[in-house]
Amino acid sequence: MAPRPKIDVRPTEPPNPGLMFKTKIGQAKLEGIDPSALLLRLTRGDTSRLKRDKSLALSDIRFADGKMYYLDVMTSEGEVAISELIILQS
Image 1 (cartoon, rainbow, N blue to C red):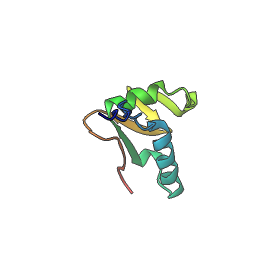
Image 2: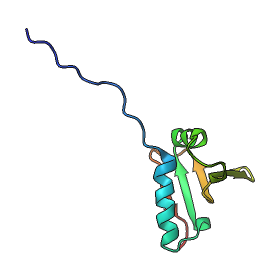
Image 3: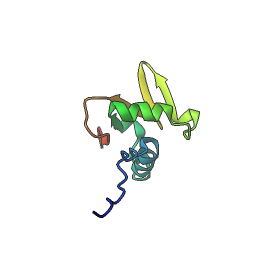
């Protein structure tokens, strides 16, 4: 009997939400969209990863009035299956 090939069964690393949304927010700003017109809807897991991301500058995330902001974009945690950046107004 032939030996079975080794298969890597480790789960894949989830994408880095800080890097992914930094790019998308930057693109929106280049298109002239004000950060106050954006909402970053995050899964609970992405919110947790964003808060613990040591590669982000301390100034990238701030908390005010009970809300979290990433690059001056308000975030909303939970109630989504996939994190997304949405435009509230144009």
